[in-house]
Image 1: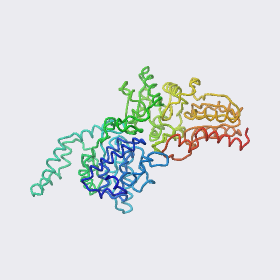
Image 2: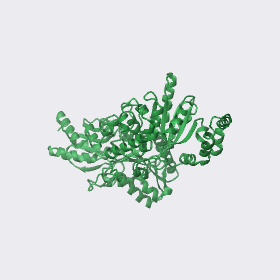
Image 3: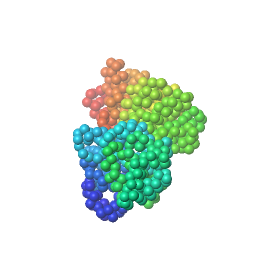
Image 4: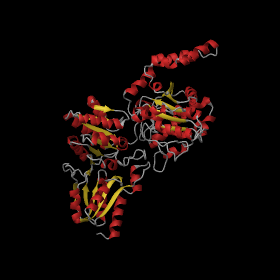
Amino acid sequence: MILEQIQKENDIKKIDPKDYKLLAEEIRKFLIEKISENGGHLGSNLGTVELTMALHLVLDLPKDKIIWDVGHQSYTHKLLTGRRDGFDSLRKFGGMSGFPKRKESQCDAFDTGHSSTSLSAGLGLVKARDILHEDYKVVSVIGDGSLTGGMAYEALNNASRMGSNFMIVLNDNNMSIAENIGGISNYLNGIRTNEKYLGLKDSIYYGLKDGSKQSQKVVKGIQNVKNSIKQLVIPGMFFEDMGITYLGPVDGHDIRAMRKVFNEAKSVKNAVLIHVITQKGKGYEPARKHPSRFHGAEPFDIETGIPKKQKEQASYTDVFATVINKLAEKDDKIVAITAAMPDGTGLKRFSSRYPDRFFDVGIAEEHAVTFAAGLAAGGLKPVVAIYSSFLQRAYDQIVHDVCIQNLPVVFAIDRAGLVGSDGETHQGIFDLSYLSGIPNMHIMAPKNKWELSDMLKFAVRFDGPIAIRYPRGTACDLMKEYRAPIEYGKAELLQTGKDIAILAVGSMVETAHKVKELLEADGMNPTLVNARFVKPIDTEMIDRLMENHSVIVTMEENVLCGGFGEKVLTYIQDKNRKMQVIPIALPDAYIEHGNVDLLKKELGIDAETIAGRIKAEVTNTNTI
């Protein structure tokens, strides 16, 4: 087995070139087998096997630096740097991350996880190299999907005046998570398919390079007018017009061709972009045919590609998808916006039924929010569906373009709370904190699937900015009997007890229900309240609880700092009430990857740990 010869970085250079094709096949087989067991990002990794091999053949790691945009495609890089054994624990708690991590290997030059950051990071490394008079190559690998993000263009604008070697590899597979959209996608399609330019370069430039004096003169002439030819055949030549040398397109599955062009790029004295054409999911037919489904795959059957665990119950995303479609059927002013995630956010069906009212803006969260603000200012009712971790990229736009103008934009915040295997960059644990401090913003969180439906109906009628945050995974179908109408800023009293009051937010209401049962088994009878609103908090409910309870427990799946518990605690302190408050929240820390239930236990927000903490703290203070 050729792959077994790769024990550490640069071992690939010992492999006989005639075995490269076999090595690529073994890598794909290895990845398919491991991801079918543990889950992970499959399609993007299958598409970049040869690309990664070529980079490792022309670079000297860890001296040279590779920055992988987002990092979904870094699995082959991990294999070629001696981390094969780590795939048995891929994305598991305490195991190997699914993204590049500096703490994991010296060959990981920069931690990534969000889109469109690699060029800015690469520019920083280039400048650090030049200022410190060091000598190494910097390569940023960015996908065409990530080029829909505005930050990439900010970096390109600066890269154009770099004056020092900086290699940008554009991995062009015409896909991000969903199929790419927009002008840059159309532009790259034009380059891919322009046979005039490709044929001219292949048949004239390379065909004449036979060593004769006459041929050399012709070749030199073509080199001198190369940019003019590009301008004539491919109008605009966007990258070269910016001052960035453009090489390609090159077949991203031809190692020999990529090695040649990468070596050429190493000698360029400024920023150089190498346009590489790859096929997402290459080598595994189910992933090739269904790239969106195999972007982030759950464990699956290799023969069929079908997930091993079939979904039995509706998720919160499914509930959102159903309700938003019903609302849009009754109200033609409702429009929906997402940032390259129509499937993940549940808007795929909406896009089919209401194509004129659906907008996928690409991986451009900032634009999505300001675009929604414009739609609202024009009299429509925009619903922006974005994952919690990604929405924070548009914080300034939420503040300045939506909330200052008090525009009626609904934020459907999916994947709020712990999301599990993708780790620090994807945990949605900050949204209550970063949204709560914004004037005019209102925040809700549903306890179950019926309440999400009711909250969405409330939100589209609300005249101002409003957010609904809900977790990943199966929607809670407990407590159906508790369905009081949604009232602005009002909590919902679920069960009345004495001495201890539990005030829980969203997904933690289900946990609080279990905590109540555990405490009742020990002779305690706590009151249970569904907070519903995180901003504004229901101060009247808190006042009522303070009258006949000595302990208030707050529960939220958000960091403690700036969260719901701090708001309740501050309110009680401002009232000068001597009240014991036990805030249950996530630590103010970045939380690594792992199974969500395991993470909750490790972090102390599972029912058993919370019940034990309440009993211990209440007993120690002799409150009851």
